[in-house]
Length: 471
Image (cartoon, rainbow, N blue to C red; front, top):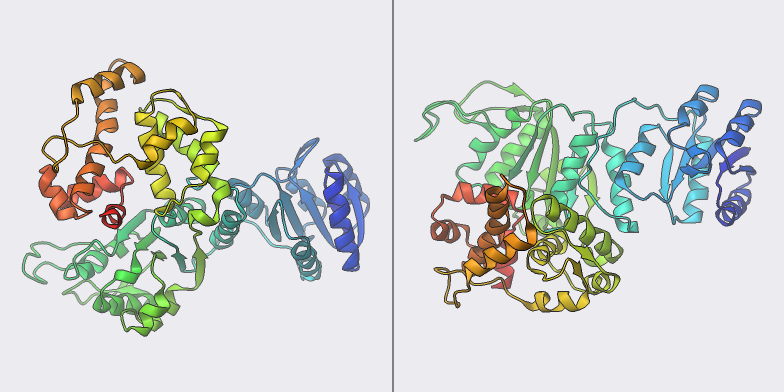
């Protein structure tokens, strides 16, 4: 069987050719799209293996020309552009497989063998790809995540995202929704650990008027709110057992019944769940239903901790600096030695902790160019004490505001909003530190209600658990 290889890097082409020939293929190699099209016009091939960035164009953008000539031929795409966008674009073409570089040559050869033996190529729905994808990372660990995401975009299989706190599980859920076929519907996120046990069934399934004391009107639950879209159940490992039973019934039957109601409401909702717990010990301890676990764990996606993807710390840091600038903080640049220092830190709170630190760095750094020497003091520095919170000394807030205003120079008409954005985050962080992450005490100290606090913490990407661990 013949395989057409389109690769402009001769060293890579030689290695791939040797591996495919060892599998029994005859390899025809070319290094441009023009030569690819000429070969395809005159010959049939068992499979096409193609790079993306070629001297005369984009290998993904021109797949339609390949399909017009050989609609059933399986295609394997290679790329050094290791982003989720590239992975999704490759999958949108109906490619048999996508390999980010560097890749395992033996796995590539096995995949081409499987592709060549397939009865027909994969079909593709021609759907647009969302811009502004929230996930960042070029490490091998994140490439595996990207590839898993692409596999679930064209179906409604239930996904269980596993990983430590702060690794970006909700971002994966959002990407699955934004890039999938339900993108036009709502994305409803529920932190099941943050809802009191006595209210969780009402929040998820809704309730009828008079169902219990205080139920003065019908309430539509999250399942119904997410109709046509995606329901993201975060911290599913902390869901009370009674609610687990109701959730299992809903997943099995495809219907929900409001608390106090009789009507069975048909579900049209994709379920994505996430947890930072190892659920198998929870099952053994009787805290999580085994049958619910198997219902949720149809497609598991494992989010790697930051310590397993240190190659991404540099790109993440620069990404967060850019976002901080977009949100009104001073525009900063990171030097090579500064990036290397950040990559050596433990970041036990994972990407969330790194993001929080980068925002603090953007606010407090004395120079626009941040090197290792500027970072070291902030790595061990606690947030500044605020008058009325804790027992620390009071710092000169007027001088701090003056320094921020001089260094940031926000546009006229935006000063108030920019100042609030810059001040609110460290204020909330300090109050959480002083209250050891206790949200009730933090809300009381701030003089706001707990629901407002939760909403603002989510918007500010502050995790109370981080402050609990530090206490």
